[in-house]
Image (cartoon, rainbow, N blue to C red; front, side):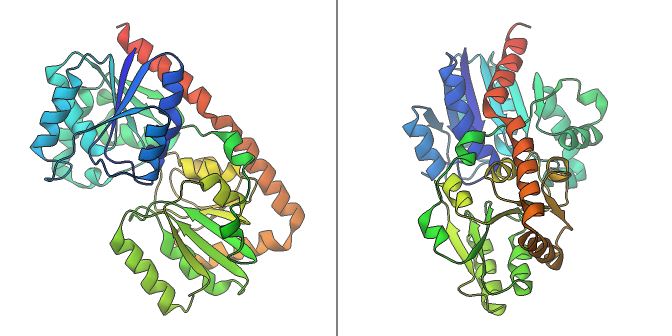
Length: 361
């Protein structure tokens, strides 16, 4: 089978990381698998895919993601005999839907979040309804993602939904060696891996450091938005947390960063099915997350949920774990038992089942 995945960028993010883990596995199952990006900036994820032998096409334009030139380039690429064109994120979803009018490829898309900014625009809903009608399958990555999708579009527009939980390479994270440079930053390390985007809530964790002893250090791993980075730096200075909050940038050794940590956190305003959370839960460290859609479903009863945007609640949860070793070990074991259920190989098999279903129609 000839399969093309399409995504906006290969910056730090869950959908982007999924490309790195999933596409080589689909290829190794005997298929021609390639990737198309709307931004060909060379990132750690980009390099990983190239090193694994995945061909990357670019439809980038100086006019941005929604440039007509991107549409023209993507449509031309889509007409090159693909069996499946599988999109992720907004711009690829829309432009592939249009491009599909001019080719015979079967269209599949994945919704990676429980919500998005498009849903806040009342006039955009008819466009979304048309767009999703062009897809033969809408893959949902969590129960809440599916429920919100149906509530937004209406059940009559969601007859092609199927559920495939995102997957991770569990054993890669469970057995990683600690990154020595991270381990040397402080006595007790809290790590948070996420792109510097408004969806993520790094500020709550920065504020929480005021309520934790001096021997606790916070490592924020990620990048992608200079304005957000400047905001974090300003907060660190205002709160006199220089030397205790570390902006580590984008790293390609995330399993090792997590292994070097004492606690792993995910502070967010909403999620789909967070791969970073599952990776954190695999790491053998206690995992803490905001009690929001997309995180509650995974973490409840396994890791620790703290109130959304409540810095003091996060700090209190850390201190409780730190003071009770039996409780801490119990949380670790529950986290790993949950995470192993989301192995990437199971996901790859389910994606192929979706592809086979639509091709045989």
